[in-house]
Length: 339
Image (cartoon, rainbow, N blue to C red; front, side, top):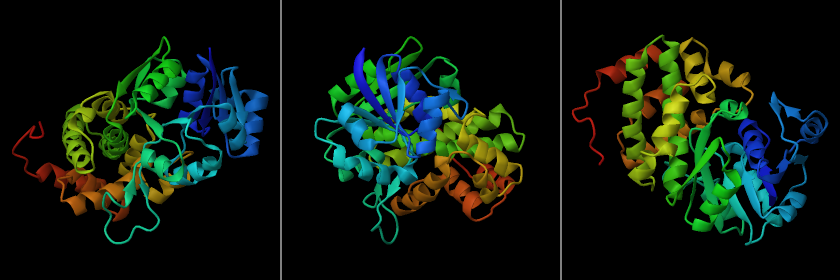
């Protein structure tokens, strides 16, 4: 068994990763609110998730950083920079961080149109806010509910450092959870970010009562769009045609367990974005991602019709039916033109 491993964030995905890690190691799980730590300690449960006996809750970041050389930060992108800033005083160059957050961060001082200089992936936030050098990310078709039920799954650990990939694989691999490696850290991060946009659109298709032909069209065109955007933002095509790209896209675009899919479904049923966001337990990352990526697509003049149309649905009150109608009328001459 490995020495203690840290997980920062007791949301659904953080809780599931803590349980998977606990099969091989003792795990310290950080939750910001003391009452959450108390609930986990007393009941061994949180939001329907049962915790492995080797998961120990804490709300002391200093204690966690002192005990754990390997830490998995898994919090929402909106709170990610603040969390790393809070953790940073206790981090050293020997620490190894593998995040599991699928979102983007806008630098506070960003002015004018958004471009790659003003937007950061989570690994870039870690590098900016701490002394940690060995950084990686987790991405893949990792629907928390299925993993919590012990169903088989897989993920990708991406990093510029082979040691980070090997450590992630050693800690996370179980009989029911496979772990692949990839050296394209930015590409793999962007896979996790961009597929959430397509997942919202896929939920909207289902909400309109459309079938699998329409979804297959959306997913395949969405894949092309992800590759265009990913290349413009610094990723490689290869990342998008693997598990973290097409694998995660397929899972998130067809599952009612996906928060992003749920947002799209409810929009198509006539709810407003405000109504949906008010009664969701956890943030659907794709909403904020759509806002950011639409601006990046404009800046770099990237063909991203799904992102642009979804932006209008989310933030300009364009009815879902009209958005779909406009997308279907667009003319695309080539099927695959990115290889």
